[in-house]
Image 1 (cartoon, helix red, strand yellow):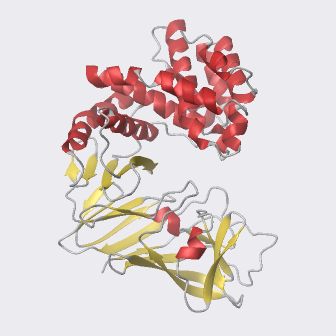
Image 2 (cartoon, rainbow, N blue to C red; image 1 turned 90 degrees about the vertical axis):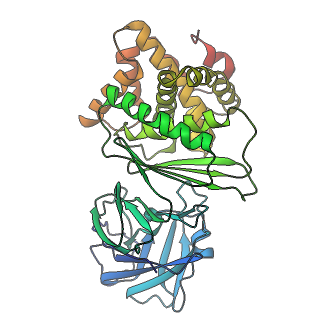
Image 3 (cartoon, rainbow, N blue to C red; image 1 turned 90 degrees about the horizontal axis):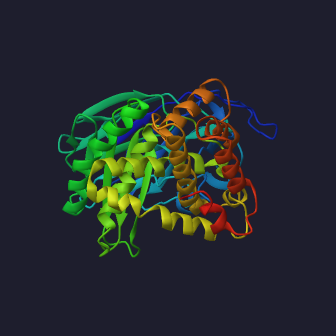
Amino acid sequence: MSAIIASGLALSIPSSQSTVQVASKDPPTIELESNGPSSWTATYRMFAPTNELVFLKDSSGKRNSEWIAGGAFEIVGEGPHDVLRRKDGSPFATASVTVPTTFNSPAGGYAPFVHFSDKSLLVYTGQFLTCPDRCPDRPTWKWNLTADVGSSKAAIADGRVRRGRIAWTESRKASYLFVGNTKPIESRSFTAVIDPSVPASISSSLRANFPKFMQFYAQHLGPPAAKPTVFVSYDEHDPDTGSAGTNVSNDISMHLYGAWPTDPDWPRRVTWYFAHEAGHDFQKTDTSQSPAEWWIHEGAAEEFAALALQQASPELAAYAQTRLQPARSDCADGLRQLSLHDALANGHHDLDYPCGLVLQARFDRDIRTRNPKRDGIFAMWRDYRQRLKNGAPPITDTYLASVEALAGKDTADWAHHIIYDRLSDPAAALAKGAD
């Protein structure tokens, strides 16, 4: 049985609608304990009694229907939040919930458990985080974690491989914890944990190309904040086929599922995803709270990937060249009814990537045309980071100020038109000035 204990410290903003009788200033201690392959138990211990705990991550109703609070407790949905409280409304200092390892969040968050074919498990701690009464917009946790993983298994947290009884501290609001039998592969630039069922074409591409991506990005944007760990899992029994990539606190997770595609471009597509997720490690900027601006980070990571693949090998360079035109077509199809800003704000998050790539590819090209000595989008990203450091908000207008400074006013005006205006002919507007 594996046990993990986490204690946190966060800023807590009182709610005018709160019914808390004795408010706790600090988040609870969280003890995570494995019950075997099917579930884990999370126990919350408060520093002072509270009437409710609010989960940081929304689950769109899944948490209150699938987590088992048990006894006198319940999990209820209130607006975008899931709340743990006693059924009689009285204050409490300790509460426990049992979480099935099959639980998956459909609300844009990350699943708390990702399975490997050899029974190893990747745990995303963000789904367990709570605050008394209410979480502020940007809570900051300080974690103290311990776990007994046994001599036959390995644990990976904070980029370090550990065995036996372990302890570590981190100051991130969410992270990945790996516990299992899959043997980690350590290199100078990253640590990899690759599911033994992943086909050799993927694992060999990762080993050959990921170091190139890291070196390429570091050359233009400086070193990453920390040595990343890359987790690659595979569920061949899933009825659907695809992949899901995430980046959490410098760690990268790629979950592959379903029957292995026969598309010959599939290994190159997965390699692109690795380059995209690695690119996020080097952005080192806050993401806007508004989904309408998510094209900035996702689009930049797409263009980073295109440039990284072009440097990696002739085969990958040729594949990278095939990505732009389909992205332009998908973006145009998605902008027939709404502007990009409004489409993203209304939940059409499938446009972050294609429209983001079209915009960022144009920025990169125009910067290089205007000044061949500059390194395109990387020069603009450094300018954008400096603006944020100087106090500008991480929003579209700030980013377009960097676009205008390096790519020129015409390019910035074109981007503003694409982002904010309802386009009568999206395909023509996107293609304007593209060649």
